[in-house]
Image 1 (cartoon, rainbow, N blue to C red):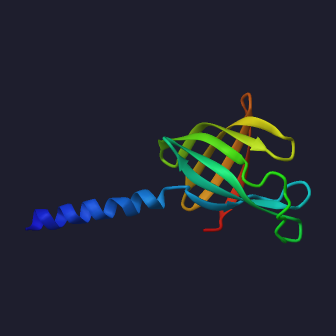
Image 2: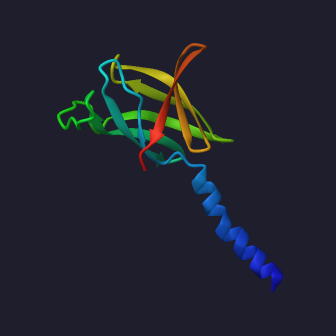
Image 3: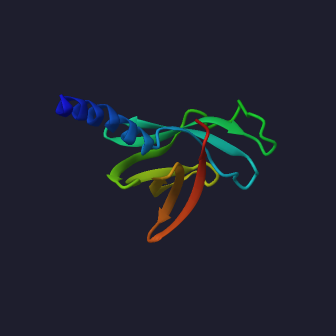
Length: 130
C-alpha cells in the first residue's frame, strides 16, 4: 500500500515539476528603440520550442493591431538541453529584419533570450504575461 501511494505521488508530482520549468506561455519583450514592445507566445513546436508575435504595443502601451508582423514566428527551433537551457534556435529581430542564432535560459520564472552573431550574444529579459 505504501508503495502504491509513493508511486501515485511520484507520477502525479512529476508533471508539476516539468510544467514549472517550461517557457511555454505568453511573454512581454523589453521595449525596442521606438519604446514599443511585443507579446510573444512560446509554444512546443514538435521537438523544439518556437515563439510567435501575438500582440504589438506602441510606446504608450496601447495595442497596435495594424502591426505588420503579427503572427510571424520570432523564435524557431529552440531545443531543451535541460537545466533551463534552450539552444540551437534562431531569433528574428523585427527592428533590423535580420535573423540570428538564438538560445535562451529559463530559471525561477525568468526568461532571458539571446541573439548571437558569431561568438557575441546579446540578451533580453522577457516578463511572463501568463
